[in-house]
Amino acid sequence: MANEDSQGRFDELDRRLIEELQSDPREAYAALGARLGVTGMTVANRLQRLRNAGLLTIRAEPNLPEFGLSTEVLGLVQADVAGLDSVESTLRASPYVLRVHRVTGEFDLTFDAAFPSEIQMGALVRDVQSVEGVRRLVVYHRMHTAKSTDGWQAVWAESAPPAEQWYELAPGTVIPRQLEDPVAVASHWVHALAAADLPTVRSLSTPDVVFTILPPHLSAGTFDGIEAVERQAERTRRAYNRLWYRVIAVTEGRPPYRLVIDALSPVEDRKGQVGTAFSRMAFAFANGRVSRVLSLGQMDLPDVPAPGA
Image (cartoon, rainbow, N blue to C red; front, side, top):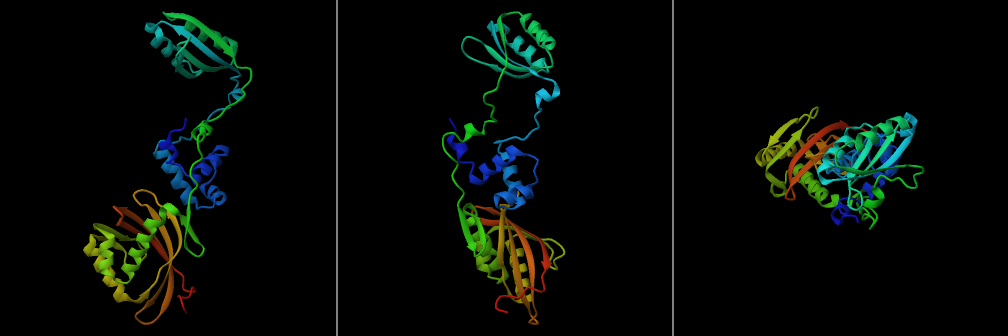
């Protein structure tokens, strides 16, 4: 039965991503994202989250018959309790044994194995039978596999993962519902910073907030602590008559950042000149407040008019 807590750690996007990976786990993130309706970065972040949580692994598995390992068997062993460890060690030492299980019931151990020929299978059978305490060994050849699954059907057997809810932040800008609250805080924080609304900036920030602007922005630097961030907000206010932000995309960030916001930023400087830039900012939060902001870059877009122009 699927664990209820595990079910809550998946949503519909996770499930669709896993289904795509079952066909080709090496497909490019951008191609996966295009089919799933998200960015390649979101695909990469989702997959990394699932792996970090221990919910899945990705590995290469051989096509055994293509490598000449066409003799596949299921083995069952009865043994005295004192001999079980020795039997298990013998089975684990064989490169042809794929899986070993301790079980309840008539037998004590089962194992799956694949051999290049009956000769290697016979050698393993003799090795196991020679272990002290073995009472019975039965080997069945695998004739036909009626079902082979990687386990995801069992994960989702009891109930479907909850469908991901979407939220329209602005016309044409749709984000996952779980990002609605942090996006609202981040957007409010950016607007307050641009307007030098210091009480709002302070209320939305942790006292030890860190704001980093990367080159080539003219204000590149790290502003450590709420006082330093407030001083930077004042400098921004003095540099521009008006500064707007139009959010165009939101994606999940990589730790420690929760999300990444792409925005168009029309500005009017003190000389009345208007220009537009593309900005990308990553946000981290603590207790619902902004704790870290990274401005990843800026690209001037002089041909994009300001709102109302």
